[in-house]
Length: 119
Image (cartoon, rainbow, N blue to C red; front, side, top):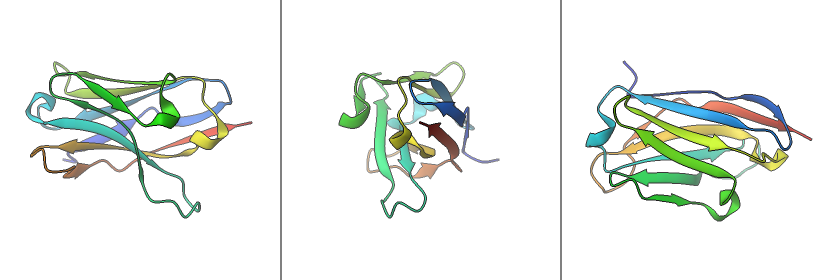
């Protein structure tokens, strides 16, 4: 069983919204942090940090999503969400969920879910 499974990606017009979900096979309360990263295929860019939430619930965001994206976790469902509003074409990417079980870095990754924003 995959440790992390994302869903919720799709195609949306600029200004629209999507909610990504990441279901963990382990208890999310056991992870120090859970985060979302993204990578735009063909852009030449490395995978970039989007948002993360630590065990205490404190979130952190990349500057380019502040005020538009919200990360949250539901430990009862072992799920982390990324609510994305006011989407822009430059948000088009494969979005990956990640978990950090050791506080030393993200050591579990999902397979990714495609988000495409059309202008």
